[in-house]
Length: 153
View 1 (tube, rainbow, N blue to C red):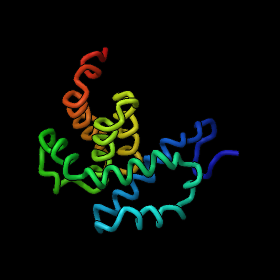
View 2 (view 1 turned 180 degrees about the vertical axis):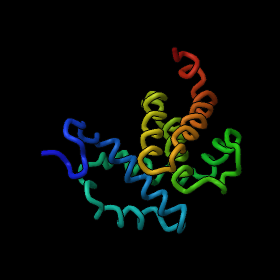
View 3 (view 1 turned 90 degrees about the vertical axis):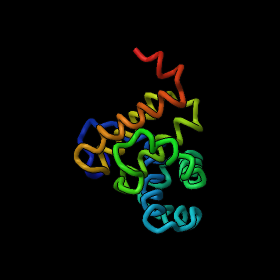
View 4 (view 1 turned 90 degrees about the horizontal axis):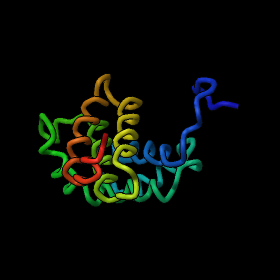
């Protein structure tokens, strides 16, 4: 039986994708309220599908991004066409997640990181926000993973 709202034949979301979606929801909440990461996590445990998420990846993303937010903003900022504070909370959250995975999770191929961020931006962001996210994270990848990015074909 397929999930409500899912087209027939659409593959189920991976545990990692669910973790990223939940982390993005938490980051959105954090960007709006600056609430404690543990409190945000506690709120999210009641979210439908939470039990199907990769809990370790979710926690690493939510807590890691919040702890490193200033460093990540500094990494993202030179690649923006506006100030970080002018980004929509969704774009900002997606860029923080992507930058964190690029910087701190080298075991995840950079193309996977960017693709996952683009998918989040398509689902939760503005109409063309995914294009912006793609461009920014591609430039970030060139800085933090130069050998991997240079090897792309």
